[in-house]
Image 1: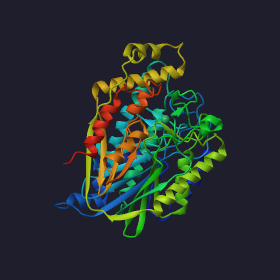
Image 2: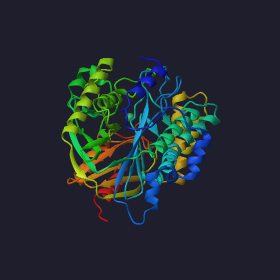
Image 3: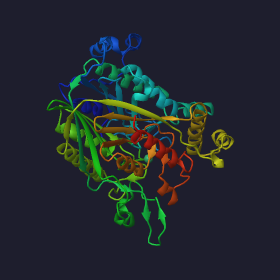
Image 4: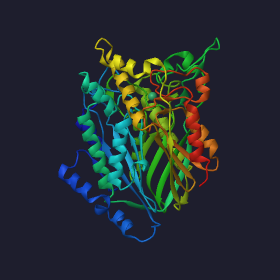
Length: 492
Ligand SMILES: [Zn+2]
């Protein structure tokens, strides 16, 4: 354990030297921000200005990597409802991403070491980053890594809680404003120094003994989803098979000829080894990413969680500090294997597609507006229930105004990079790979997080319905499958 300032210093020192990668540790001044916004991204980025001035399309490419500190302050709520708030910071939470610049409008990808970003807060992130990068919000992929000693943010829900005297009980909007400002400033700064790239690298590597499915079959034949992140200390959960997982980590990299510039890693598992003690940490995926960053200081490394609503480290993890390090090493090994297997192709053609995804909200009575209001407004109710009621109401309000969410796919040569909502189960990631067997399909999870768990049809049949962290109605797999088919199978 280290104190916050020294942890941040260590993190800053660990950044790749000489890359020109900006790290925002404090928000840029209001006047500077206003100036940049008024000028628009093109005015301060020679790259974007040249793009705008050019007649016809450019054929050259660049990436602008960025990083910012988004560590929650001591005393901040974790995972929206956990009883123990942040007590100390073991290592910082980061937002790490890049802007891809090329013949089309820019695309932004950012992985945030937070639990979840929902509804109006998710829109705010997309809008602010789109504005900073000179693109539209649909082309901004915001993916939470989903650590649990990290915040859940939803402005609509926090406003409802403010109204019943529960200020800052879901999250602290002031902290959020500063954190997002740092990310926006980092994007703006990165666009001053975009790094030319010529090739796309694609590689996959096996990860041994990390992921396992929540689903287990008991000796009496009963099936449930009771294997949690720390179940490995119980013999039954330790000995039960891994179940349905995607065993491979996938790495997408950008190169300037034979020099690697940036690597985005994705693996499908919940990212927690230990949580609930108020010890803020980017956990084992954060540690693995930093190990890889140390291996290759000249490459900018990003880690995102795949579709892993039903996948955790539960078979292997006993919640000991030692296992956190072991899991980090195993994940790091997968990154190394994916790197060794990487094949490069010249960057040539990009297309961005998005389809509206309409997921139905839960229809059972406790999720009706009057029932939720009663819980929110009742001081006798446990705080946890009131916070969950506020989150549910905020989603109901959002869905009245905007029933669909953007489900997007970046097509870049053989790459298909998709951002899935919420806690999508791993079955969808595997189905996406089957739909496009000739392509290199990379699924990022935990985009718009209001849905909570999104089970597959098979999981529903096994009884995964009406979980307390699930806001979609039964049968949501129909909309999910249809939208995936539109993105991956439909031509034109
Ligand atoms: Zn989760």
